[in-house]
Image 1 (cartoon, rainbow, N blue to C red):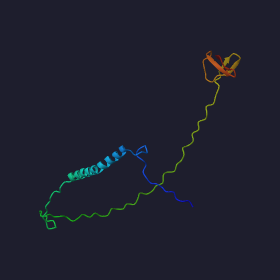
Image 2: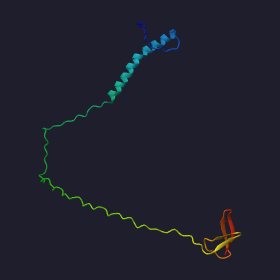
Image 3: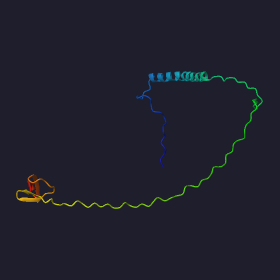
Image 4: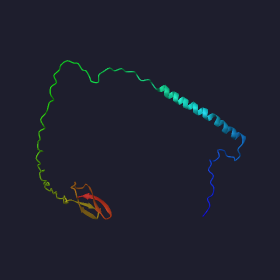
Length: 153
């Protein structure tokens, strides 16, 4: 077993040097001299402020017997009105929605290409024309080499 080492409990020094000089002792004694009167002054200012904020209660006098004495003109108070209970109505009948029938399928056949009977003569290539054009007007044929311009017949 190890012996317990003594542990010193103290606050760290408030100054950087290890020497306690005459000036340090004077500062501490001055703080001690003003601490108690400063505390007493602060407490008396606080208590004086709280005392000054309090207001005396307003005196009120009430003379009575403990039950109200109401004197008024004679009046007729009708009995409370009772209403009959609410009428129960059954919920409305449930009608299922009408069946869904899909609309009839509309089929539009694709537009078929029909040559107009005219042809475009573009040098060595002759091709049918897609749109009718006036004879002798400009037209073109699409080939593997690109477009060739020619005349419509």
